[in-house]
Image (cartoon, rainbow over all chains, first blue to last red; front, side):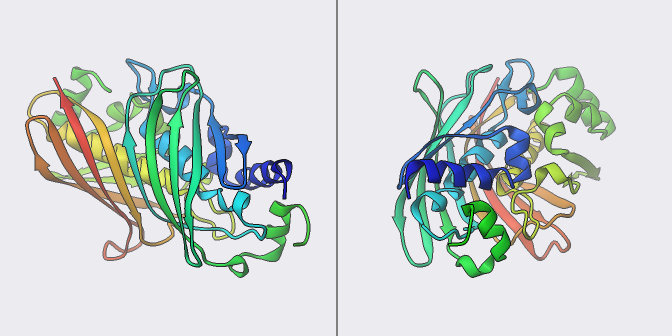
Length: 156
Length: 144
């Protein structure tokens, strides 16, 4: 699997997640161990109307989506991995009118669990938030084949 | 996050509509809040745009997190004697069950209130309070 295929799979996957579509998440970069997604700035997700800073919830969703889509980059066979837990540390408010990126990495992959680390940052490179997550592997058979093929772009 | 007058109005009337209308993200996910005596129950009505997993279908975990996080911030604003804007420091979420495509509720508890930092616990459930879909804990920094 190359990065083009990975990016296509992740794009198709996040397009089936209504909230990810609503937020306008897009794929920035993929490797076999990492994934970067972009959250564009929008007035609709502001948490503090005085400063225009977006709400932490939108960043939580960005980081959960990025970490939870990693398995599409790391595993040949598509499995949906539900989030077990997520811990987010907010370093500084995201600067308004600029996109926020999240780069997630697989820290360790086991038979049952995927351990992830994720950093949210902006163009100038300063960290907005860090997150560690654990995701459960429930196996590919937990999903209908038609849905799996829709994401992978054909039978696997 | 919000102005003094709105907060005062909310405290006096128990009507959260103005406060919620002043926070775009609250409208984005559709958060609502009801007061029962001193208790606050936060509600997140079912909404297509909030879904993640399309197969179940289930609410996006991030939305559940955002809902709990915002509930905790509003709860803390109302629990303070003075007007201090809570700023979130960190947030730890455990997902216990899938949040299905139906109304979700949350309640908060102030675990510890210090001079500068507050610790809030949040529980979210759907059909039955005894079957939480998620529990979370948040630290907030309180600034004058």
